[in-house]
Amino acid sequence: MPFELWVVKVGGSLHGTPDLKPWLHALALTGGGRLVIVPGGGPFADHVRAAQRRDGFDDLTAHRRALSAMEQYGRELIDEQPGLRPAATDGALHAVLGARAVPVWMPAAMAGDTADLKCDWGTTSDTLAAWLAARLGAAHLALIKSAPPEAGRWPARQLSAAGVIDRHFGDHLRTGRFRAWWLGRGDHRRFADYINADGLPPAEILSV
Image (tube, rainbow, N blue to C red; front, side, top):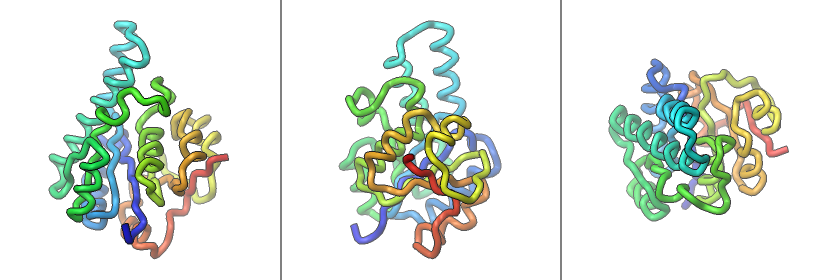
């Protein structure tokens, strides 16, 4: 592809907030053929956590249900913003990108039971986005968080200890060739600058 591909994880913490719609509009406006959206789990994943505590099913079952939770959130994103399209496989993702549209990744088919993902709660949509970014050969991964970023270069282990990202994210950042960025609720105003290479986000996540 003649452009630098971005993978953008839309945090579940934006669900039900006034920040979600401006972000989706910015991604649809600037990202056609240039970015893939990874939905977070949001309240749908919280229901899976609660169900596992109540019913005691194993982590692999919880992982698969959490993937379905991400897909539920993804469908809400698609319903909210025209121009977003679901895509569940490598071929479908590339087909949507080739049509100059923005795919929303539906992860269950690709990430349900694969040896290079740890199927526990240390793997959330953060790590899944990093896994997908490496698989697609993306140049950049952006994690949109409700926690406001501070400018600087942040080690993944520090952000994981602070609860900003999950436990396994750094492992996939080390093995990928992409740069990872921490974005906040208001960064949709500058996203066009970032994806058009007119400047990069001020908060970078490092693999160390």
